[in-house]
Image (cartoon, rainbow, N blue to C red; front, side):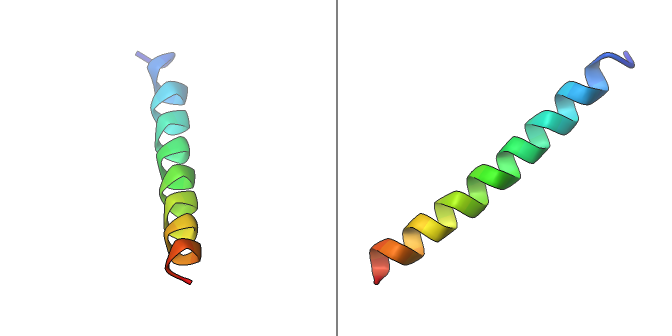
Length: 31
């Protein structure tokens, strides 16, 4: 079970980065 933890953390970080990039692209498209 301990080996699964890094995967979950990586997935969460990837999701946050994707969300930030998506928001930045959306704001640029609106401009």
